[in-house]
Length: 306
View 1 (cartoon, one colour):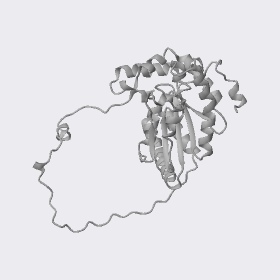
View 2: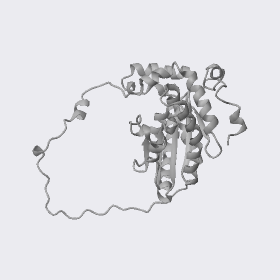
View 3: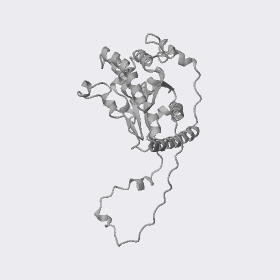
């Protein structure tokens, strides 16, 4: 079932991301001071740790889907979410292109293996929605496969939700000008060059194709009980804070009191002696040499200054 509001924005309508005209009318957001950003990010990350403990103790299962334009900041948001979480509980799912065997499976089959068990969180850095976007636009699937996906996806997600999985879907929205700016930055930055693939580059020439594919996907999959939440990602720092805060607001977690721990006293020595250091291979002390040098600076992601 699709809401009447969704029906009005079919694939033939201009996407909100299709042109920059609408974006240009909006005043540029005020630049966020670094100290304000870091303070709020730390507060939110503290809450994420609280949520994780609730997930662990209650056996909850959470799936968070990150979709959107290339260079919209999905990976950066996931990195900040998982920074202080237990990797055994909160795991990132970023699947490569399907193998020849996987291409013959039911489309959703390889994603099922990565769904969470009790007390686990899964963060999908792109997901089964690949078929609704890149696969359709780039011709990696047939029109029949795409239509089957649009028909089956709401059913698949309803089954997950009925089984108790808390599903959250986030679409990171960015303008064509901002995307191109970030692509150009990645072309010359060796630290982020790996993020730019030939498919990413070609997306510049297929902007409206991706817009239409996204609009059509929303018509079929932005349904009651499994809504899409759109994140304005023109500024990455704002996008991270907004997205994490919203995620926390949708999870009914509570504070879980931890059992107190005490470190035991060390027992008396039994006479053990460590082997002489000359018998071991130690890594060179680079840190000591750095103390004699001056200058240098930490790497800062230029995209964070948007």
